[in-house]
Image (cartoon, rainbow, N blue to C red):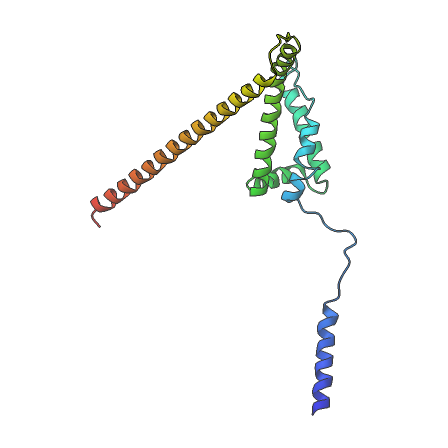
Length: 194
């Protein structure tokens, strides 16, 4: 009986292991997912395609729209060539609701804002550098610069304290609004006749 059970178990185990052979996928099928949309072929490539695009105001608006749509179709084909443009657009609409894509878009928009602010601040920096180059030595010690830096730190500390106070005020107002809404809900609940 023991020999028969062993042969039965070995046959059973061989059947199980035969079904679990690892298969090599030679031509993997790509899916349009968040990682592809956020990856180098996705939104960053779209930004590159539209980097120097300026619609021609002298032409018909429909011509500008046609060129715009052709650029979008070209991007969709570069990103996911095995699908139709309409399918890619509908899939991108659904993927745009995903957290990873939303976070990516927020980060890229913040980077754009930071870059815009840096571009605006550059002329100010140039003026400051030019002013510093025109300083005439009046014989005073350089120790006064340390005091100026200390004043700047105090201004930063004042700004942080002001920011904290505004933040606490907003938090307090939000708590008051929430308490008021809860109270109104309780009053509505009590007033209704069930």
